Image (cartoon, rainbow, N blue to C red; front, top):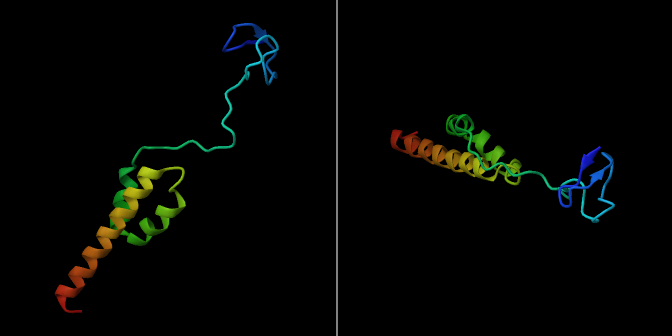
Length: 92
């Protein structure tokens, strides 16, 4: 047995709503995924070293890890642009 988060009455563990107050017994996420707002430095470094990784990671993780995906994408763009500048300066 557990207790309702709203009214404190004892309810069954499998209850969806509290019979006393009618409030949801468990928090609902409505099918939404949790958003992670942390930035993984290892993935950003990998995006600098291998820009293709950053270009692929950016759209794949944009909804679940928006800050990390954006950081990887920007790092890949900067790395790719720097590589093109170096090639242009080298005359290749």
